[in-house]
Image (cartoon, rainbow, N blue to C red):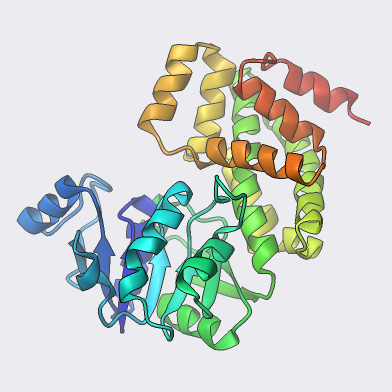
Length: 325
């Protein structure tokens, strides 16, 4: 089966490695000419992961028609802020029987819509699924056991993705809650920034666990406000992903927060933002707009936003946790 991968970041490469390992042909799209040239000259992508040898079942190209032609599953792994643009780009080549699988995490910046809604609207797609769970790309490439929730409303589409991706190191569990799984996947990055801030300030795992416990309640409330199922917080996309992202220096969101808490240096903070994809930063801004539109106040998220915007000091975070009723 041919599978299209829209994006050549670390996570896209990790997914491609699993799909290719199952015998599928994966064609990865990139707009980065350097990555395309690297593949053409070396048949590898060492710039993404220096230790992974690219499978013969994986191709890399900037020609979107070649990527889409004949593909059965279309994986979105591009940064969430480019979802609208990438979906519009593939529209001329999209066929109604293609299955969409969204692995990107975030909420569309301009409209505050979930990525599934953006893609459904642009492509008039019926077979849309979302995968989310506690998986770092480097761990997937190292063939460590990982788990993902796969959300959707079409069981046939979910089963096709499960069949393509499942292996002895990847477990997928079905969810019917497209809304909840996406909220969990996006919003946990905000709290990972907060956890990093606490880490940068020198606080221990105990304090970060305190934060995680409080953030679980806020994510659960946000799922409810958005029309999802609060129990989804207990899925792979919820607690598992939140714990992983909030406790690991492998997380760019945690690392960004750590720089804020540790240095309080605007130049270093901005330099990190400019050299890393910090999804939680953009999701934070979008969620603040969303909360304003819906007239909802989530105090912890508002405080994280104020700290990131230099309106409050990082130290306010621990004070808030202690004083919260």
